[in-house]
Every structure is written in structure tokens, then in C-alpha cells.
Image (cartoon, rainbow over all chains, first blue to last red; front, side, top):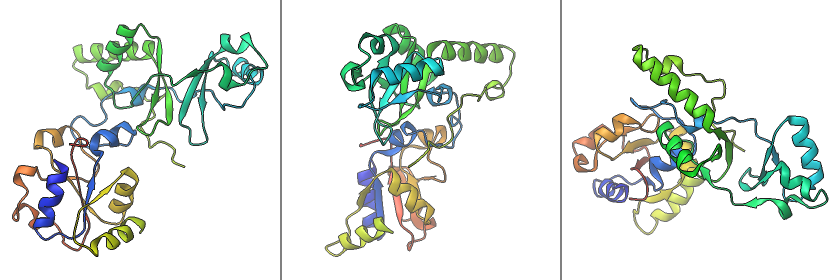
Length: 186
Length: 82
């Protein structure tokens, strides 16, 4: 549609016409805010936890293992300088070969979800795939956080309970882990 | 502005609309560009980009665009690469 609209504007005499080709799908998948009657409704970006451990390809497994231990985490996300997700590494894999580099023991190209997925979409996906968590990335592949199925299910229960009581959904929206603010941009 | 500079160069041979990405949208809007969602109004009402107005493609004519200032850049968008 936007291509035809751009050319229609040109035919109407507008001479500075731009077409945002990737459109609103790209905008919301990057975690940027929107306006409208559905704007701000709970989605994966709101619920993802941002306190994710990250590491680089060249780090030694033993260094990363120590860091995970100190942070009380089981998973470390492998990112580059642009915070683009390259892999995922679990604590068990690090222990198997402490001298290996992260690149040697990581799981490459982990599946991620976009921050604009609805709670229903997320929970259906996780149940179908039997997952406990998923990484959330924007449309450029940059890490936004990690989403836990337990968080999603708890939030859905809260919303359902609030709905039964006739309370506005937004009023129970807990933004302790919210990442609805603009992603930190480099 | 880099986008507008590129746009100016492209205009030498005609008046082709210019394809842009998200960062360019942010810069152009900050500089005062009009932002138009061309999807049907029901889609727009659900959720749209901040500051966007809605002129559905089917209604995009001289009358509907009379509200736009012609000296400002105009950005159009829909859902994705449609």
C-alpha cells in the first residue's frame, strides 16, 4: 500500500515523499512506542526481564561460568558490540570444557521472539514448544531481554482476575520489569 | 540532514519517492515531517506510530491532502513491505 500511496502523493505534486518500507511491523518489533486504543496493552516487550547476562564470542568458558555463578544465573546470551544475539550458552555447557571459548560451546542462532507479541501468542508458542523461556530481540536482532513463561502465565491470570472484577487491565499492569521505554540506542 | 541530502540528489533526475528505514523516520519526524498511515482507519485506531495521521490509500486525494503543508517532507507507511 505504501508504495502506491507514495506515488499517489507524488502525482498530487508533493516533491519530498518518503516511504517507510518496513512499516509499523518493524516499528513495533523494535520496541518503539505507539498510539491508539491497543497501544500499551501487555506484550512480550513489557514482560521481558532486562537483567540478562551477556558475554562475547572470545571469552573463556571458565570466566563466564564464574560470572554466572556470581550473578545467580543459568544462561548467558552471546552478543556482539551491537548487542546483536549470536548465541546462547548454558551453565552446564560451560562446565564441560572450562578452557574452551564461548564460541566453541555456545548454541548458535537461538530462536527469539519480537517485543510486540501478545501474551496469548507467547503462551501458545511456549506451550506448543514446551519452553520455559525465550529471548526477546528487536527487528535488528538486538537483545532486549528474556521472557519467562511463568511471568506470562502469572500476568494473564492477573488480567483475567481483574477483568472478572471489572477492573481496567492497565491498572494491574506491573511494570517492574517493563522495557516499554525506548531501547537504549547506541 | 543526511536523508534529505540523499533525497535532494535523487531529485535531480525526477521526483521518485525515497525508501527509508526506521532511523530515518525518527530523524525526519523530529525535523517536522508529516507521517501518514495509509492503512484503513480500523488498523490505525488500534495502534499507529506516534504523531501519525491516517489517510487510507482509498481516500488519498487532493481534498484529503489539503491539510498537509507542501514544504514539509511526507512519510507514508503501512503494515510492512506491502
